[in-house]
Length: 130
Image (cartoon, rainbow, N blue to C red; front, side, top):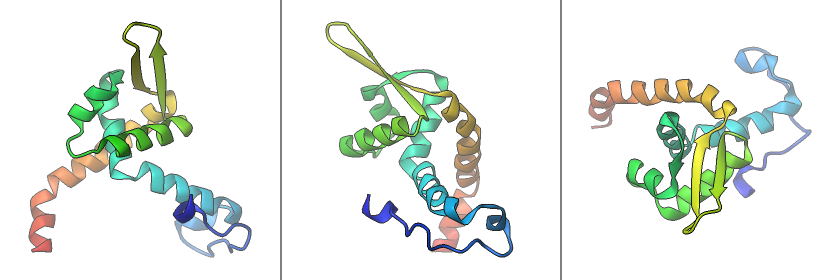
């Protein structure tokens, strides 16, 4: 957990701005969740699961560039937070499917807006970097 662990109990609430309405004792947890759901791999997994359950290999195929280790790690975290479900079927060979949980469905629209925004501004951002 290293980097995700924030100092607890020593924070002051924000005096003004959007963070002012958030209790100081919630801020570390909120930052942790934002870090997780705002992660590129989490967002892409949530995006591709909208059309229904997928197997691990299908997820790998639909998310170019994700390593096996990162896919496994991210799926585990998303399941831990209740954003996706993992269903193992007692078949031969065994079949495991991942799907959006109700909590994940609520996040899907936001994720798609972010991905769309990045896609729409791709050329402009690339030009600014150059």
